[in-house]
Image (tube, rainbow, N blue to C red; front, side, top):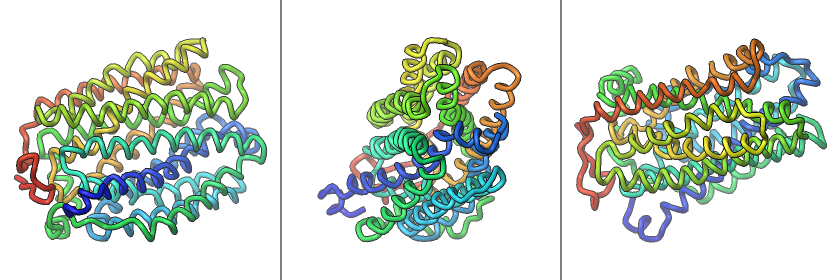
Length: 422
């Protein structure tokens, strides 16, 4: 990153541009959950089949993420980001053509493939524009695009679907994403890498796995991410249906109620978590990790309350509380891992995290919750996800205890490209 870019604020413009992309990244994903009741009526799906549709994206996204991460370490991240946006937008629009359950699963899986390069590319690019003094804030602001995308995707898709059928939202979001990729082609610039990339080129993905698993804190951060992603996938996929079925609201109102309060909380939590973690990281090498543990720990009772109360008002309060503390954790997912791993392999590290988080977390949890709901109730199934948060908090505390500051850095006034690794 040049001094000129830092001086003229372009590094924050980059965050804004990527914010618009991640908005559509998640709007496209959430369009499905908003119209599940409509799809159920047309295709006559069971709860576990609905869970399979929700998990198909995660399975492919998780399996292909390591390859996407390695690709991002080898090519221009700008190319990976904008190319991925164009591909997943085309697939999103094509989802409207799905004639039945099998094709719907196939399109969701294909969209998972199209989106794999985005997060490795975006967080690596942002981390090269922002050093450790502003990294959590930058990544936290970028993360808010996820929450607005979830709200916008769920609400707009439900509204469009209510009037024009479940296929129409996929066409709208797909066309918007294609147009955005063309606009950003002319304004998004590739920064210099924070460190020489030759090491990343020489190392295999197996070498990256070995490095991450042998770094004292990293495996526990990775396992905590799997747990947190499992809980998030459960609530994001099932909450609109839960509100619709439990409180007998219209499809559009259910989508708005289930998404707005949780994501508004997450928006505020990501800003709070990013700011507090940057300050905590200047005082302690475990600052970001402890902020994450605090967020998930306080979020546990809100997850339980989301599924166990019969009052819509209390449910919405629980949604907001869960979202706020989830946002505190999510603002620091990658910043915490980047504190303990080398900058040369950032794309591969994100690919590994996405593989684990989506394959073993989001790829299994929605299906499991669907089966639990069939045996008991959807509310009980959602509340049971709080147990996974308990495990995540324990893993984060272990990570903090084992963190020995393996990555050595220059003083805070140095540039990110001057980092020295172990």
